[in-house]
Image 1 (tube, rainbow, N blue to C red):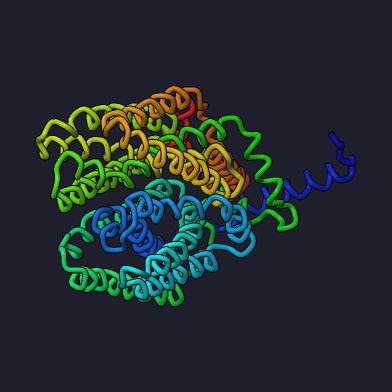
Image 2: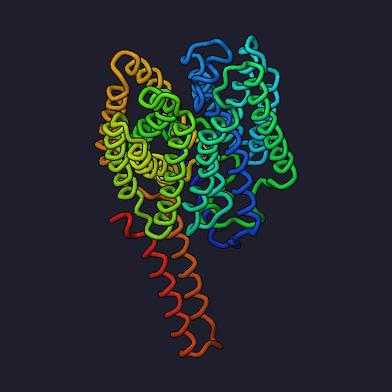
Length: 496
């Protein structure tokens, strides 16, 4: 190991001290625009997620229209996963160097472009064009998936950051839900190829129009950051000198963080199972319930909508309790229970039972997604949320590709129950690994330290004023102590 010169060490220590002092005195204020920003992001994330699953939700229809295999249609969904892996690091570097606005513009623009390209694939022999359009949309996804925790941290205060992250993830989940619901309705399984092309064109035109409108809104509305930092932790990051930050060093720090590495694997296992389940859902349901394409989409919708409720509840719960480790573990265990229930009820012949168990599975499995982002942001502070979220998503894409291909092959050879039990085994492994992740909540500790610094400064200024009466000093001290106790109640329980 190369040791730093003492002068360099003193310089870094002095810079860190100056940054901490600047953060302690910086004005912290919430921007009204923050809700507009997160809702706009959720909207174009929704549109991109819809385009991910719009083929898979009616796999059999598109396979017949283009004259290709079901596995080829599966690859249209898996292209999102393949594209993300090599492009994560360049996009994460851009996010750190150029900020949120450039990434938002690129993501929404590529999303609209891909939607328009798909309109050139309305003939059965033009399958390569629809592949090109889907690949462009998959490029857009690289600029979207790592944003939720970064938007939440840059725009929202410490008592609403988890809720904001959940809302940001909502868009993606709602897009998948719409992708399960709308394509079976807009594109019925008709025999006439010309009629089928007409129905597909309606879906593609509508998607392109919405994606273009959202891109225009991003150009007009989306801002880089609020005028004032929303939290002490964010003020500390803003006060850090630019030259002090190294992207490569940030990645190395993350990869040396044992708790984060455990979380990265467990997040990948859970989300990879979700990706495989979503991609293959149509094939599973049609196998047991022939001709039920619309209900297959509705089952997918049930999974996502119940997951959105779970994500919102868990986000509010985290903002109130800060029990990241405990909440993540409970949700993981219940995801495993839900997957087991779904596995053994799918073949019973009663669709309403499948709806119930799929809803239970979605409540926990889909509800886990924002938990992983927020837990990672806590474990890795002050490293970039975009980088930590990106690494989580790389893990998810790798496991998603492996699980989708493996489960598809298992289903072809041994049936759907064997394929779902394959996913259950990895959810069990993820549950065990989650139990070993320690709740090292660095971001909450930074907020607590800065809050205590503020209180100390206020106490000093109050008691040093000669004109202040003893009664007013006592009242002021009581008020400050109440502030400390209130803040500690939201932070300390999670680390016990």
